[in-house]
Image (tube, rainbow, N blue to C red):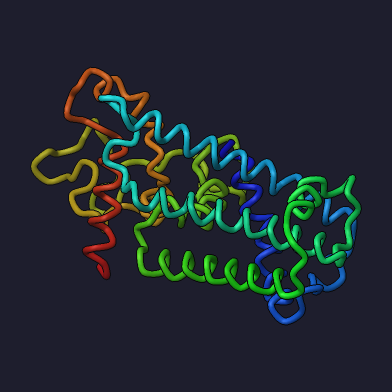
Length: 264
């Protein structure tokens, strides 16, 4: 479900761009590719799967949050609900725009390529300016999302859509080819040098980090990329035995502290 939502977020960005053309011209679309049947087919499939996927994720969140040891405990729930509502709103607007075009007999794709859009159009009345008004709503929804995440830099459930690509690319792995990541795990450092545990002096050497700015840039990126999904928390033996330890809450606390303390 999450994979379909992720793909729909990337692919349907084109439909948001298309909305700017539809506001000006209710029969408009993306230049060049906007009238390709393949484009209509792909966006139709991704739209349907994305809508189904986000509804599944909403159902999972509602079911799991009622558990005593829910993996969503400690997550900022309004942010998740906001993102889910935005995705649902944009996807529904996309089908409504296409539906009005079908009702107006200005839709360029055949029914076999866009069956859902044609089904929606069959129940909508003809309205010449219907696509324009729905496109305007879709733009407002999208801009509202951008403004909200810009004002909430710790909103990992939204920011991970941009940061996850870099976080995965730069993940530490000794098996990755040179130039595609950070290599093996970085040794523990003390006073700018790798720490030798055989000769380390507990009175002089520092073990680990004492301040948030001592984390590497990759560590700070890890904090910001956290989606607050709680999967790490749900697998934690301490959390599952009611111990006061949660890897998710630790990461979230470090993330919030890092942003609150910046600049370093």
